[in-house]
Length: 235
Image (cartoon, rainbow, N blue to C red; front, side):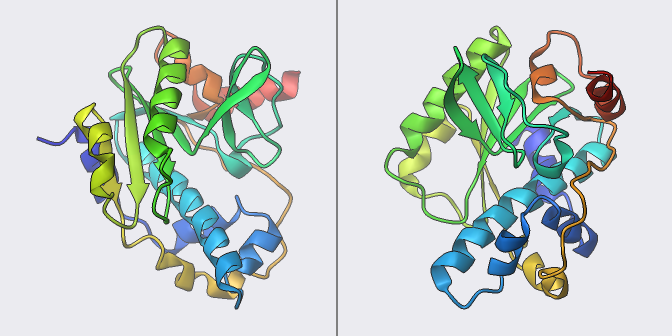
């Protein structure tokens, strides 16, 4: 029987409006390369778009379901680059990194908590994973477990294509594949907006989006995005 959170993400619907929202996370050069003739450049940009649309899918699922308790901000929803020496640290473009003793130890694509206190992290990819993928995921899971103080950590493999058999051990260890072949096609839905200048980087309010560090607090993540923004502007 599938985990209810996994079923939610497998079944959540996304529309053109969600694809447009995903574009706000991409710098203009990356957006423009979604229509590039050069295959390699276009493929890199498609990977970035897939990460962004997965995040928008999670935002939408979080709005519609009580199963999602807190979502780590990503991309344009991150107000500033963070300099945390331990725990979650954001880059200028809003990517999520895990730091230990001031050193960047790993980067993850998706981070959220459910209403049972479990923590989920995801790797979103449109390409076959490298040979080191299993060891990297295990290392990230160990880092997150250390931050979470023993709370359950669940890995999600997010892709348009089924995972190769070699990744079987990750799923035997409690991970789940979430296969969404419908998402890359949304790029065609927003083709007319790819070259439009990106507006000033501003987050879109969401009741469950928060600083990634809040995901690891022992209390339930209930204060949400608005309190996060208020704390940011009080700094």
